[in-house]
Length: 338
Ligand code: PEP
Ligand code: MN
Image (cartoon, rainbow, N blue to C red; front, side, top):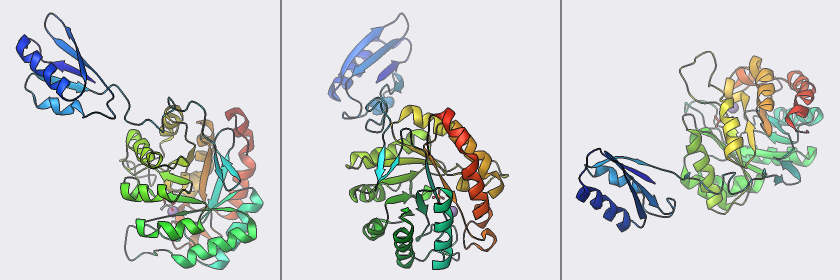
């Protein structure tokens, strides 16, 4: 850490700071200038007491962090891309993975028709919410355990792997028994107890970025999962809350580029929640590929107008098929294969 002392501070007061730095477990290296002194505090910021508390001393102007707060998710600790094996389906590296399916599991007919359609179009992972985080308590909350059962049946028939959201710690065990990937939703991105419990399940985890989460905070949420013994994490950019009203959220493709530079974890883009409009999905998918995403998660419904959740952003079967035909020429320049 770097501690900047206020200009014209007498030497005794600088010494007070040095003493405090030593007491907190760091080795102080002062650099005395004509007017101002700067102290470099040598020590590991992740394992030592934070020096930010020094800000309470009247002679201290600023305390600055030098090290990043995350280690396990950082590319520095693991230069190669991580490739996650989802029950035989690779995610990350040169692979481009398509996850698709309805926002919510609504019925056997709806789920099976969608599973067959996305499989035929080339998707390898079936999405579908059994537990839904709805803004209003009066909206469809999902089929719960029946939804999980249907997902497992759809997996049996099609061979698609299953991704589904886990909303609470209480549900981790039975959702993990049915799913190949646990989805942690945007609203739970900083529910640290849920992250820890999900980590303990040992299942691959797709971690959505919170609605107002800074990239550093998103990476720190992922760090929680790795720090609790589960390295199989996929980051998912799904749009953040901004002043814009034309789109439901603002899909932050620059965050995808940053996450790819900063971390070795695969990054998946969710343009469905990101834009909230079916008409934008194809364009945003192309953008996601170009910026280095490792895959997409797309909401697909047999009849979006009749959907019980997120109808406005779900694409129908023919639109999804068209998307799958249109993507390959964009994958090669990005160094990816589907
Ligand atoms: C979803 O995938 O349907 C969903 C609710 O996602 P998010 O948590 O990103 O809003
Ligand atoms: Mn949705």
